Length: 125
Image 1 (cartoon, rainbow, N blue to C red):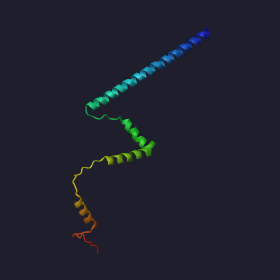
Image 2: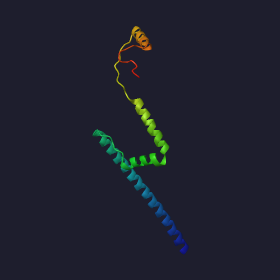
Image 3: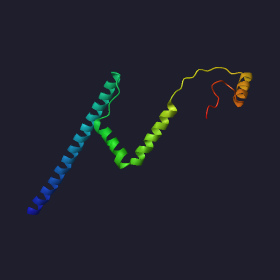
């Protein structure tokens, strides 16, 4: 009879532990769902007010840390790639004009022949 009580208490303890683990898992999933809903509402509220959602401070610190200490070469490659992309993305506004063949030929001929303009003489001793 003592062995039966010991076996029943072990079985009951195992059932209680499994139930507690399930309850903790349900609570954790519920808290995660609440956090995601609040995060979504915060982003939506910021966008409705016309502001850009801000990243938390610890995210920026982690990104700076990983670029400088964990993967320094990756941070440099990203920075150079970002600057290259930035320079390609620049827009230059120019004034367009038509050039006919006669004027383009004459200007090319003028450039090939040196001109004697006043003030462009060689003044070296």
